[in-house]
Image (cartoon, rainbow, N blue to C red):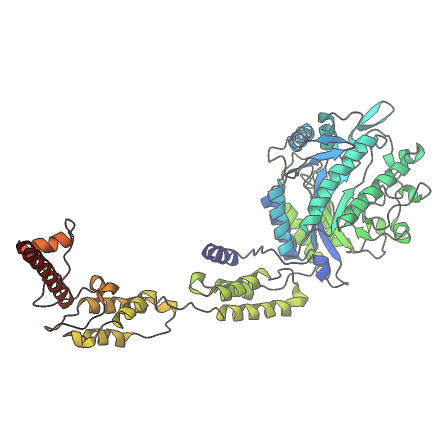
Length: 594
């Protein structure tokens, strides 16, 4: 308990307060009229560390975003679980072998000097922190395209014909939709991640990507080619399977828009209408994507992911999706303006940072700059967090040494602090104020433990066995007892210790009267406890007389053993023993003479 109390104080004084056991998903607490506002970061192509992702999440929280989308599988695959083992169509893939294969795949795509993959421990800390402050994390494992590292890993593990081919061209990043074993492997791999994020309870949405199929082997976007060669139905089935896996894990499925109902055609099949459409592009000549109103007619929720807000790392004022243009369009585009100028109801908006060239710098300062610009431009949509400063100050008033307080009152305080919700926003300031008031009460209701009187009680018990009339100076006991006050708290332990020492010294200072005292039965060993003193009966070394020899025969003293004072009882007892022995000896002499 002592260790837990100390750890609690350390946590309470760390204002991040990543306490677990609370914090519903942000969407459960958001009023219906508050739209989603999300920052997307491409941590699949380029490795972003735990610290960098935490920084982005904290900035999102301060700026009023509701969530952060983290692409973990996007060309590269930058996250592995502790247990990556899988069984696919009766074939077992060991965890270590799969991890090694993923590393080979990442190095083949881009050997990032900043790092290879995030670990499960790192991701768990990220999720716990995000959940504590009300930021929803949207993970992305992109397929069937943008799978460069995963395809290499599959080949390392012995799978064959995993890449899509067309006219003797082989895709670097897209899985072969006709290879049932390859498709089963990708879906099983995705499920590993889906189950982890579902169990973590920090994500409302899981994005399975599904954008840009095999563009590297076609002269035109791949979706139209799939429709021409009769494989688009396979893509629909693939997408619906992933959507169901995600829903089974308690999350909502999401996909980028370009592959869904390509060219506004539905004769090839129907997509699961629960799939959220992340609408990033309205297409261009030869790239005939379905429009927002078509998705709405099919019942799909739409997230505005306008590529006018896109920034690609390293591009400052040149090339497409550069920083200068992103900042400019952040100012010109309304929150609800979808790509292509459409204006239909959506569930919110998402700006995105991409790492098309992963060798470029992370550009953390520019990421923050874009987030600040977006939050300022759309301040009416992004609701900033409530003011927790007073609450944070109250947390600093929690006593550092909780060992002084009763376990029950400390437990109540700890449970309350662990239940603090950090996701409230400005309209809910009254809830934060109420929490602060309750915290103050919990601190004030801490009950100090009682001081430890146990040693003092032992001495007082000894005193009850004494007869005041036996001592010349019993008033030293009376005076010592008069000092004692009951029911002192542990903060006055020093007073109790002082009274204990005073009473102990008083007992040692007692002096017997000349006449034989009436003291407790020697069986209670009081003579070994009390260091009594007498002016006339001090311990002396026994003389070598017949009496001494007889006494030695009945009680052998150990070397260096302290001789007890010869009190009245001891002297009387010795005389009785000597008398008995003399009578016994006389009887023996008379018997011999007779």
